[in-house]
Length: 337
Image (tube, rainbow, N blue to C red):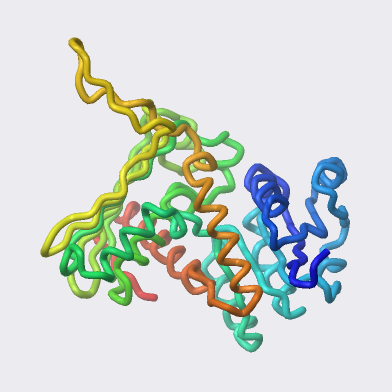
């Protein structure tokens, strides 16, 4: 094994954790040395597949001086605990979103870890999507002039299992948090200062029992007056609907939906007949997840800072909390970071 290989420990082997494991295994710069999951049977079975060491205690990874990075893809309620332990052992951290569902806990964690000056990359993978990222680059180049409006559409083909939704924190913290992050990315230093949120339950009446929604719309305004409209739905009959529009004083730029085949059929009976959209977020953002790992390599080799850091994770959760507050109050709410 080469001396430049980055040894990594992965915590959490659920759906997203296993996807990350596969990407880490196929990346030339990483060695997946340890895996950990509370389900030890699952962990042991996957250790053979990944050729990794299954550990029953995370401290084994923390104390191993050869481990450069702790990769956190475990349940949300474990994120802050693992972050605090990892940075205390001077590890670089990758953590899936959200940091936590409780802002007070996040703020306390921020204070405790600040003395370590940690390098923490948050799993806002959509920042790395080539199409979404190109919007930011074109905006910076002045291609559309001064930014005036951001419109983000995000619709899932079908909702996650109800057991997942029970602990997800709700549509604003679980689903729309990605869009809050992208909106902040495009707005740059012009932070949002007010939010109005509305929502509904159409497809799944069980959501009422867990106080969640399957349809939500948010309107936000920055300090300089830039408007942002975000629409989310947990069900979409025609596939994984992911679109972003930036409108400016000199033009507009759009990141549109992606398909397996970018063909359009014109015939006697129909025009503009396109192939179906991609059906799953892992499929739609497969390239983004890989580019995200390339960025993690640069962070580990001290060549760059995280594109999405702890503070980005904290501020996105603040927007989610204020959106939830607005939904309940039925009025615009002020944002204070």
